[in-house]
Length: 153
Image 1 (cartoon, rainbow, N blue to C red):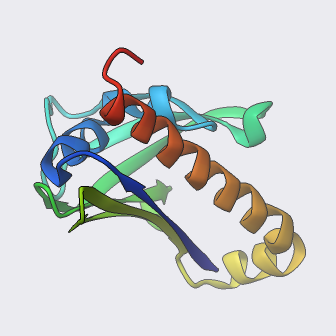
Image 2: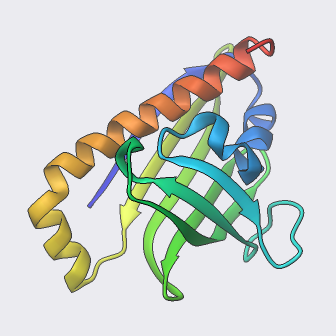
């Protein structure tokens, strides 16, 4: 009930982190989350800050808004958040930024919160959903890389 994808980007970790941690950029990069907005008067990332993301599941629907809470916020190093359902965590998303060679290795990962519901969901749909998540993470990272390596994109 977890996976990750890593991609090398020829850009400084802090520059990539700034793009990723401003959730208003999410729609530029994610194939499923097409919009995001800060909540509660927040204007930037910090642990505990909430935001909501507009999801178009599997790129075609259904469409819904999910509330999220930032769980990790270390400039240039990591950014993470948890998706909430009825105030309870259901899915943890995390980005790690590690300087390497001429740039940064960026890892995006997800981990479903262990519960009876997620175990049943993963047993029934996990293979397909896991593939969709891996492809989505790779596409997200490729889109971020295109922007940081060629700002004209």
